[in-house]
Figure 1 (cartoon, rainbow over the protein chains, first blue to last red):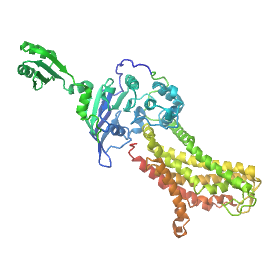
Figure 2: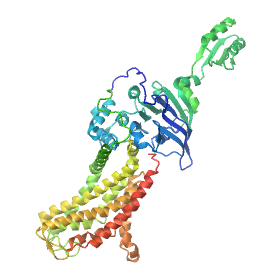
Figure 3: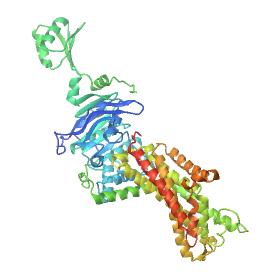
Figure 4: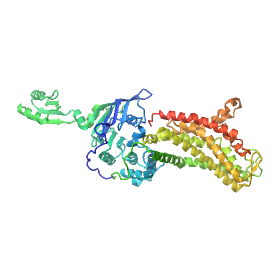
Length: 328
Length: 291
């Protein structure tokens, strides 16, 4: 694998780009026989051509949602559309257009990487058999496994296994890639390579739906984000929208907090909070340079004015209410 | 990493007939290779093949003609071909069913336990197609086991014992070639007998994600069926036991062949297929694949 290139222009997506969604669910719910609700009324809307980061702590229902999308697990309630067709009914025609990596790589330990892929390729009824070897070798090359293609899977390192899983998803050009934790177990270099693969697939016109419990790992490639917590989709939108939701705040250090608060309120910020050394308020849509100008014009001695943008990771934790704990 | 190469074509929506059929064949071949490529399965076949050799050597080296012993044993000294039948008689109660229980029990549960089941299903391999391919591969494995024993039996028989015309059980004599042809019928019949057990194993395999459990359960069912078959007080249920007609392959070695028992045997297995294959399908079709 080579070093990542810059993000390519988003290629025009499928024929119904803009009108239809690549993934759409309405009221998707899964209640397991034990009564546990793993997925609770989830309404996913993944636009064509997006790189959609599906985030949430371990156990928040991401993998179950992905399994339902792909027809592995039946939904208790709700509708699913993949590439405009209803799942799981249209699985035979839709799934060949979808490349998937579900819950980590799984292959036959005694078969080589290449034989494992040939086996999966043989399962695809929509591609001719004579090009099987070419498809498999090309996918192996894409993930940098050509040298290890003949090695038994059990001899693969975790990173190589993850790459083989990605190769399976990339066996042919896909309109949609559904990748569950593709960076799990990878070192920083491997994580970067996966991000590069995602960008590349996106540049070729694929919609990418990628889950992770670490926002930082996929933040750089995502255009859209959905955040799961305890089986519910607690946020869905574009990355700028997520940033906006993060609540940018302005902090003014001054000896005249009350006077500063009055100015801020007049400007239309959120309710200012008085501090011993100044005042803090949600900035909302107020431009920060306007705040500076008005404060100075009102004769307030501004010692420091800081616009605070919370780390997305902090926001993520705030949304999901999770630190290191795992959802039940 | 390279950019995608020219061999890749844009996916077409609907599978075309010829391409789909060739893919089905590829998947079946892949499955057979998987089953026959496993060292454990090859070891099973090797163990099975030891029996004709051991029996042949034992008979060859014993000073007296064996009187008692498994059926066909006393005929071995007259004609080596009977080594095939006596080996099958020895192996049919336990070792052959065990081999079938291992592959059939592992079929679905094995893929589930290592997680490859989810990969196949999202390719997508439909659940029905998966079961058909898995079942077919199990039956192929059963045939390979039986054929390997027969082949070794024929060869050892040729080396150690006379191999002229064959005196059948009914007393008539046929040429060695005719007897070989009848041996092929025996192979087919024994494989068909094991096909019923393979269907049971396939069903058990859809119930669990623990392959060893499915294998053991299937093997135990084969034993229970034979134990029940040996208890005269419950003779009323004997005709319904899947192991009941297993040993009837000797009927092929009579002249004229007595088809009635063979037909009954095949019908019994068909009945088991008709119950357990749909049961496996019903189970897998609705199963949540969470492994």
